[in-house]
Image (cartoon, rainbow over the protein chains, first blue to last red):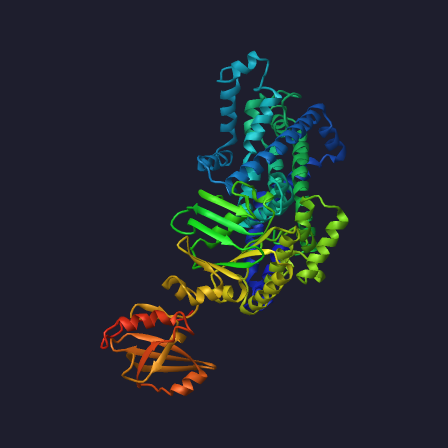
Length: 290
Length: 341
């Protein structure tokens, strides 16, 4: 983050740089302390705890069948939810940014629901809709489709909570860049799909990647909605966060919980680091405002 | 390739629409759509380009009815007001875009892009990104991109709008030369009458979404069909409710013509502006050349007479002449003034 802020600060006129630096110092200390207390120190302790009994224990915990199964399910769910929500997010984003239609405000609002309300409410709603006692559940069951307490339910719950992130990342950029590049491509003969893939998506690529990264993080981390819909069946419907919760709360397996948490945290942090490296390289290679 | 619009209507809200527009744009010419802001100029251009669909009426390009043809199949070159550069592509890739869409062979694309960049003098900047170009360079890139596909017509929306005065003048001359060289039917939108008069072979003046008049710059300047056209194209002053060109008002000895008093004289190099007050107390102004001024020798506070210039040398002057001839000898002109812009 400092790498992004520094060049801007250098350009600001007014007081000499060392004076500016001294003025900014207290603010910096407060900001860093705040972040450290909320995130840094707890996560640090987590890393310390997970490796406190050595790498062997850590490895033993994450290769345990329940952990492997949970990791696999999380990966599968992400492999479905992230692409689907990316496509839906792009489609809905184009619709909201480029078109006027009846019900636009309602669609806009619906995409905020998963951010605004607790995931547990989404889990309960899905349960009501698709379980044996729900509206659609009995009909689906009579056709041999089981959603609640099975993997489809986990996928649906995850898709529901991670729905808005691509859309919310790209819409402001779509609005800002405007429609003229797409119109220019159109007058040059490009059809709808070509315009999307050669003009629009490259123009919003960073916002899109950011949205996908957030979707992935949310998908891997989702707990509340999934724990209700999945029924928390060991080695069957446990995603990584649900596995961590079970290990901690029901199996009293602290080491297993910490090890799982480290894997989850490491994946998310890796995604963010890759994204920021790509972005920095893009900045170095060329002047680009996108 | 000629373009014609037949009874085309497009309504938006209060402004920017066009209403029952019929116009013919001659083949190979450079035509300017001219009018105040909100007159519907850009809408008319976008209707030709297909970026806006009309509520009623038909649009023809070279006798083909293109009203329902998607812009991607109209084979037009469109330059947007903000140039709409593809920011993630180099200058060369921008120019190549339309040719790639048309699946031309790689070698042909390279040759054509080179040719186009040469034409717009951007060969040295072929591998730059749009963010590294100036406004004038972006404008030329947009032109090269539009021209690369050998369009039937070239449409330019306020092509000089966002440029500073010097670049504007250069690019104006350059576009005129370019057009003389490639002769593609070109339509440009502008709100600047000097720009339009200088660059265009024919003009279409729009006001409130309707065509006020179309014709060559000289026709419109000399034979405006309305006060609006006269006032919009070039300097004007209003004497007794009649709009005339200030250089079509001549000074005659006191006692002849309409009586007036000289209130101010400004010398702007070759041009002299003489502000006058009529007996009604209202003001107007006269534009004279140095030679005319030296011959008339008027000074501030002097009482003079004014009348319209001879009809044979100045068509617009007859407007005032006809009016003063109708007036009783002692009539006082009610004067309104309109300053040139």
